[in-house]
Image 1 (tube, rainbow, N blue to C red):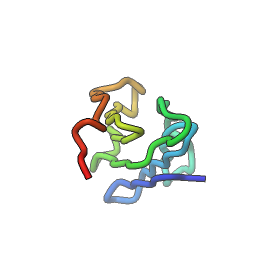
Image 2: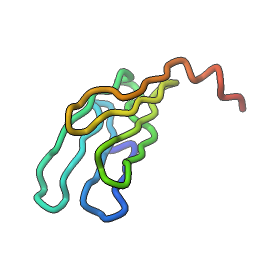
Image 3: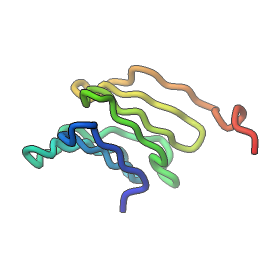
Image 4: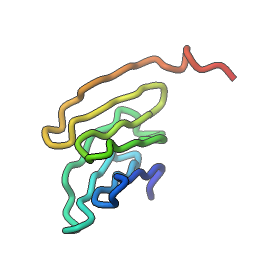
Length: 88
């Protein structure tokens, strides 16, 4: 099951986060564009955002924030140990 969902404003791409990773679909063709890994298998991606043009996906998982380039699958940005920045 999906823990988080995010779509582009034009509705052409959808990202779904699970414990297995983040899957990005092209909704016009129904094809999987890319599956991106998450480190936390217990939590998976609990927060997602997709850039307006669908070229980047950001995911939060268990204290980390990762931004990927969807075309290459490479990380554009990563910040770990964010738990220390969040206070309740």
